[in-house]
Amino acid sequence: MVRDSEPLARVLAEWASGAPLAADLQLRTRDQAYSDVQPPEYRADLVLELVRDGQEKPTSMMILEVQLDRDADKRRTWPACQAVLRAQYACPTMVVVLAPDQGVARWCAQPIDLDGHGNSVVRPTVIGPDLVPVITDREAAERLPALSVLSVIAHGRSKHALDVGRAGLHAAGSVDGPERVLYNDIVLHYLDAAARTALEPMAINLKQPYEPLSDFYRKQFAEERARIRREVENEVKLEVEKEVKLEGKLEGKLETLSAVLEARGFRLDDALRTRLQSYDAAELDALVVRATEVDDIDDLLQA
Image 1: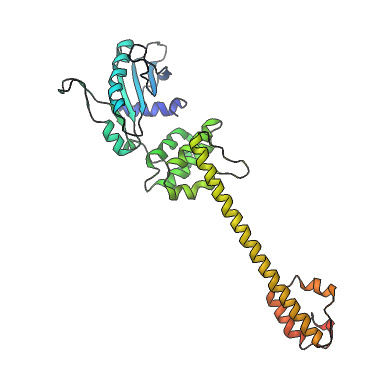
Image 2: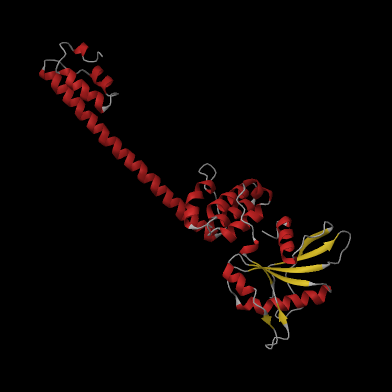
């Protein structure tokens, strides 16, 4: 999301630095591999270069890491990545960790003691859920969809779940291409069960079926669609059974009416029977009573 959304990257950079970025300061992403670091597979999730207009060399750099769980290996590699970039570009370099879970954020914020004696310490800058706004307004969500989705990640299991989820789905609907599907995936995944159930109709449109990108979400939505299909089939089955019972009940009342008329010397012909099939149960009951009183079959349906 950050790689594809410069506005979101700018917001995160401002949160990390603690101040608004200058108007002439641009953000650009770069390759996240560090060839000078051994082993060479060390990689960051994303690197942001802060570059002033008209200049090629960055004024500072941010190594952005998304951390959803505790991972001891990351706390060993973050200082290495930071040192390499600082040496390569000769500019201030920060490790910025985006941790939407409060417990993970506290863990990430712990100082990293490099020498074991507290003389050389790296302190990652952590963006936890407290820094992520609770976005519930539809217009605000659609102005910056990626930030709205981030709000769902941070607050989708809080008391704000339903409101941030609804705003997040509106935000997802305002973008095109793969991002739309990705944002839907993320919003529904990070909502609590009650909010997800309430908002699923917004994401699953029967005329334009929602197709998740990942295998995980594809399986999840296949199961959900199967559940919805079973519920619909059960509802149809119950309606059919109800209709059959009603038809049987009405047919029984027609037979009763026919028996009363025959007992009085009248016959319920096919034309009259067809007409009576449009009557409900209460109307047929009234006709049965009337059939005991009429002197002519033509008087049966007279009000």
